[in-house]
Image (cartoon, rainbow, N blue to C red; front, side, top):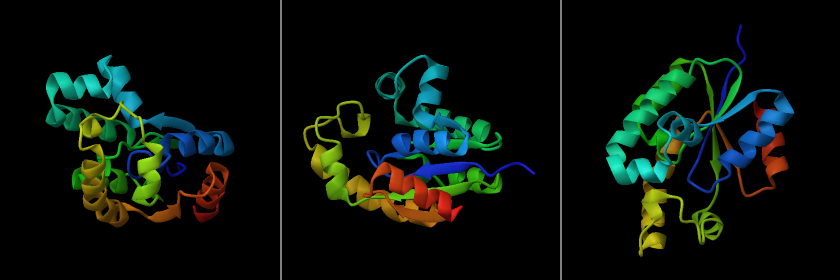
Length: 168
């Protein structure tokens, strides 16, 4: 029987890549960042994809990548902030018997973490704070309903890692 994949979800800035890398080392599993995977396949940054082809095109690439990765063996997958806001992606991951873990973090902490960040296309605008809060309010219930396990991502990365390991 294959080892269940671990799928990290949460709002942008919640630490999915940091925690994913740490878990990878601790558990001896490969780490894949979904956005980086798409960037490599397209040979463009997520920002460039959004700019040149639009969000809908990016979301299709994302759906395709989720389908490709859902049945891989023993991976830790860090999803993009919007990935699990689409039920089709959640269903694909659940049907492949993956463990979905929400890295839960208050919007105030996320706001501090994302200060000065210019790499996130959905927040590259003058009303960044307002848009971020609206997106957060909209996405959080979707993350919660998709998650098998919810961990407090305000703790240190090592604490978050150990909490995930003890819960799976």
